[in-house]
Amino acid sequence: MNRQQLFQWIKRRYGVEPDYPWADENAVLRHRDSSKWFALVMEVGCEKLGLEMGGAVDIVNLKCEPVLIGSLRARDGFHPAYHMNKDQWVSVRLDGSVADDELKSLVDLSFELTQKKKKRQQSKNLSAPEKRPDEPQA
Image (cartoon, rainbow, N blue to C red):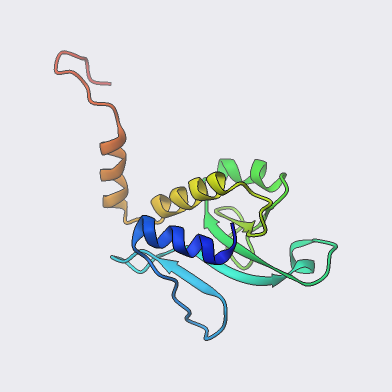
C-alpha cells in the first residue's frame, strides 16, 4: 500500500483527510473530535532507517501496543519510530513490504489507542461479549 492508497482507505474508514502542517509532503492524520494524531506519513532517507539502499521511502508512524513493537521491528518493513517515542510508536514502510491487511489492522489499533479515554472505554465495552444476568460478575 502506498501513501495515496492509505489516505483513500483512511478517508473511507474514518472520514479523515491528511493535514499538512509543515507545508511539505509530510502528512498528519488526526481524530476529528480531538485533533490527536493517530498516524504520521513522511518521506525519509533510507539511511535514516538503517537501510543500505539509497534514496528515500514513504513511512507511516503508528501508535502501537508496546508488547508488539519488538516483534514487529524484527520483521522487514518495520522500523523504530522515526521522530516519535520508540516505546509506543513504530514506523512502517509504505513500499509493499507489509501486507495491506496488516497495515490496516495497525492503523485501526493506532486509531483506537489515540482516542479519548472515554471513547476508547466505550468501544471496548461495545466489543466485549454480553454477560447473562445469571452469570457471576468477575
